[in-house]
Length: 335
Ligand SMILES: CC1(C)c2ccccc2-c2ccc(C[C@@H](CC(=O)O)C(=O)C(=O)O)cc21
Ligand SMILES: [Zn+2]
Image (cartoon, rainbow, N blue to C red; front, side, top):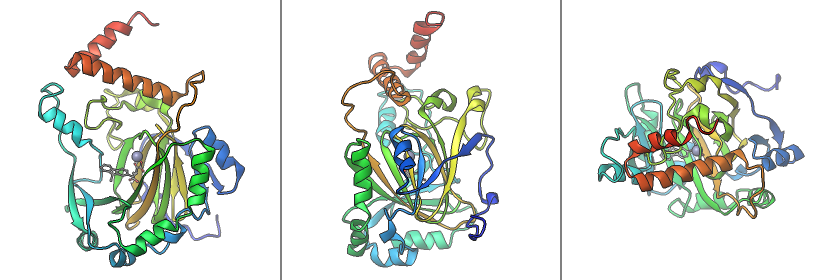
């Protein structure tokens, strides 16, 4: 490591007051990779050829071969790109879930041609909206890109999918972020092989067991699955257990593949002053839980809590009644 030219500098990482330790890195054919994956623990897989065919994906190549379709681009007034579920926004707007839910859309979703996206990326200056291109890799992209996509090392991905009993591949997202962009802490209900192609991203992960330290929004909220804690300015009075959160971090670079286990929280930032970043992720549904085995995994308890919240929300209708009912049911009774 010492003799390699350092590709990034710690000053490019945003400063957070969080207890973090390093995520392990192993060569793709090191048995410890599968050991960790089988325990649903994160690991960085080095030197695989999962996306080797995309090594040549620089912005000029993409501009030349990505075709002239419209791409999904998110715009943000600040560095954070908080996911929101627009189906849930609609439910709030038509009063389906109570009137008093304040929700301000944090990002705007626009369709943009690639040349315009790249132009705005190059000409960006302080005060401009930040951009984040997120596009499913499908047949709208040019034939060369499809060829590169088909030349991903699918044997590697399929072998992981089979060995760890994952469900079907649901999505490959192509992500082109501006330097400094942040995807705030959230979890997904899918297994994720996060393949870094260009530039460097710092990833902070927390296990599902840290649910009570990360204070997710209610399930009906458009920010379902996102943490309510603002890592830049944590409100410890509202979220006291955030002080106890214990996470794992890694900086991934070209050729690294980070396994983000299902239900694991992750905050992902493109290094400041590091130029744009390009990532392709591989999302897999969870495998068929052939038989429930005890003790339950932490992530299964998160799934149980989600189902209870959904059921209560459906039957109580007004979200303001969910908390009081749960408190009445639990406080002083289940010590
Ligand atoms: C922020 C953004 C563009 C977005 C906006 C609106 C709806 C969805 C999404 C969405 C989904 C996935 C990612 C990639 C990654 C985070 C990262 O690499 O930044 C990640 O979380 C994952 O691979 O699971 C990024 C986004
Ligand atoms: Zn995610």
